[in-house]
Image 1 (spheres, helix red, strand yellow):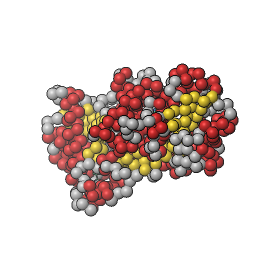
Image 2 (spheres, helix red, strand yellow):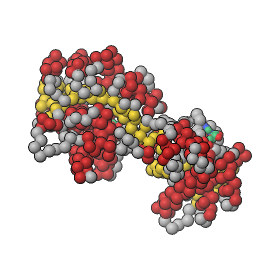
Image 3 (spheres, protein in one colour):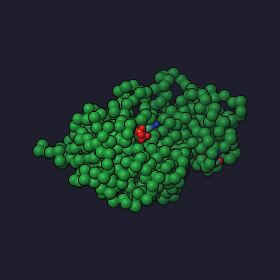
Image 4 (cartoon, protein in one colour):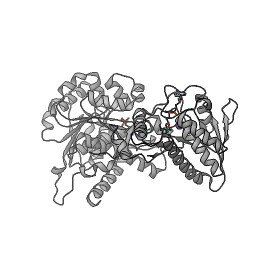
Length: 511
Ligand SMILES: NC(=O)C1=CN([C@@H]2O[C@H](COP(=O)(O)OP(=O)(O)OC[C@H]3O[C@@H](n4cnc5c(N)ncnc54)[C@H](O)[C@@H]3O)[C@@H](O)[C@H]2O)[C@@H](O)CC1
Ligand SMILES: Nc1ncnc2c1ncn2[C@@H]1O[C@H](COP(=O)(O)OP(=O)(O)O)[C@@H](O)[C@H]1O
Ligand SMILES: [K+]
């Protein structure tokens, strides 16, 4: 499936390649790109300042380093001066070290009579609004002094900051903070969207992200191969099975969910309830007998099979469409035997929670793999699967999800802020979701939803893309309904997911 260029996510190295190609293949001068970057930033700054300060005047300080990111900043400062804005450059990098386009921009800025003050320890950051042009994609390793102190001081002003290209200190490739990083109100990123803006710490530090392609011709983008994209839900509109007037329940799949060991009935209940609301024709749950009453009382539409003997499972799975295994599965002998039966069935499988934990301690289970799997680990589960720490997973979420997918020959969803979906070597990032989702049960709802989509005929890759987006997007809708991030309940997502699926189905039919 084709992905539009504006959805592509790049590493710093890939953007450098794009810059190089724009300059050397297309003959666009580097300084022209810098001018465009400065102009785009200034336009955005004015829009924000109009919102924030109305017609009142404001004081702007532009913090500049010593590379091309600083060059963009000098242009912003010069343009601001031309418009009569009270502006000052704080030169954190030594202007004596500037070269090339950044030096030209500095000289142009000087020619506009912008006041340029070298950074000193006792210098006060007094502006109403700041532009962060300290460090861009050229950042290497942890932020060194004096940049680190300046960034800390800038953050402690709590004033709005517009970050140029990327908040200084954020790793463009991974979204981790390299020691310390600017917390921006908004970020404007150039030429290519950087991966790190959209996941892990990037979600917290960038504020609203804007993209400016600086009029780089499309041809340039075709020269840089890429495997990461922002997830575009419209790609999946046609995947949902149509509800023909003469449809019957058998046409929309039969999903079986296995889990709910002793005193762990909640998770499987939420997963099954989510599945029921996502359009699947029939839902069955195989669980410990003690969970049957509670499940049936909550969802009488679900067929619940009490089962202490996993030996019965193969027979129960005959003719079914897909399986979810893991929510509330536990790690007992019963749990393990359930998992073995699930794997042995050859049905498409969503593996979550304890399903993943069991797989992590017994990797030989992978050898029995007969079907398409969809793994949905959070960073802790991913760490167990890959035999590393959850910090190591978070330090490079893109590499981690890719490794999970290849090691387990599966589709993988690495959950958390900026969830990543990896299938067939392609990584998609769901740029939706919110911290209100950091509560128990959210993952269970996701696994049920994914299982329901697979049972309706979507591939694991399609289900992972559509389901991950639907889940987090619905959580964003819920936040709008309740007015904030506190106290979201996973079960509250379920009717919103249903609403969204229906809206998508209407859109796919009538455009
Ligand atoms: N033609 C181009 O290449 C364009 C580049 N643009 C801008 O240029 C930026 C990239 O420019 P550069 O490659 O010059 O890099 P940067 O401006 O990001 O910074 C490089 C400088 O930062 C310093 N530095 C690196 N790591 C550090 C650390 N850990 N602690 C403290 N200082 C550190 C080094 O002294 C180095 O000179 C982009 O982010 C973008 O803003 C835009 O103007 C668009 C066009
Ligand atoms: N800060 C956050 N921002 C966005 N999404 C989040 C955040 N925290 C959690 N989520 C999402 O919520 C879900 C939590 O899943 P999981 O950790 O498995 O929860 P549980 O096992 O309790 O059901 C995942 O889809 C994850 O991506
Ligand atoms: K910056």
